[in-house]
Length: 457
Image (cartoon, rainbow, N blue to C red; front, side, top):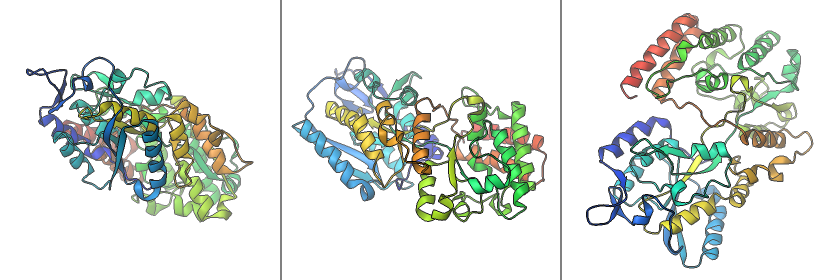
């Protein structure tokens, strides 16, 4: 997937910038009009009551860096919508998705010129919802939830200025997680590839077996803990932050120290390349060379191996990422489609947003050979494209495994700012190098995280 997405590192800036504008959402003003944020809008766009009006007019639809690879698909969706709704016109614009995306989106919202239909991620949706710039889809169309997997519809909820949770987005597409491994390397370690571990510590025990069998000739996984924090904690049921998100609490759980002890032990015993402790490289290259037993947990990685290393692909199998204490798979927040509350043709914008994210169009895009993504509608996940496995082909097995997971997956992943995540990671790295005990590393990581959280970092 070539599209670049925003990270949580900018979310605080967005929230501060928007709220500083004194924006909110109101059902009316002194002159009888209505406002969304600081913008005058049609009364039907805000407040209670279902959105009504003719589906006629011109709207703008904004994506992020998708035109190069997916012009045919999106132009086709637009043409189908316009044909089904005479009198409508959709102008597609494609943002480059650079590091100024957030500030430009904020400026557009404050200037009342934000696109009518826009692709956003969770941090951006959070900020825009709080400031009142997004249509409350759950109120304006109470039936909007019907196509979506319940857990994904739940993730489409964000807090308004009063703290009330409202549905200002439609879940669009998502990823998934699974185990990818080299069957031959696991067999050498006495591990049955048909029986994946059911817990994170069980997976760590298998890493240790690989390290002992490899004797430095290959490795189990990569060392940098940034790939595992806080996802491992989530899967283990370790609470990373307090309910209000204002303080770190992971150090209060003894399993966190056990986790760090395991990581330090595995690093010392050679389960991980020594030079990968601070590297941002994922396992792609080394796995494709047959030098790492466990590959990336991203389903698109399986296709990467298929295309780039046929000999290793022939030895590759996929399995369930450990459910551990969570009891189900974990899935990150999907990409979302939102409708601007400032839209001059909100009925058209809402109709197009729902058309774009319906089961038919989600399934069609997921079938595009240029992308490995998963839909958020129940009907799409049940499509034969995801459910039919071609023999023992790992890629088709991965597609079905993830699709089945997503029907019940938890989408309540912990979101850490880069500053807090790096504070935790750096302490774990010190413990892995033997420069600090696991207990001290966890204690210091929690203290540093709390300092950053108090600063709003």
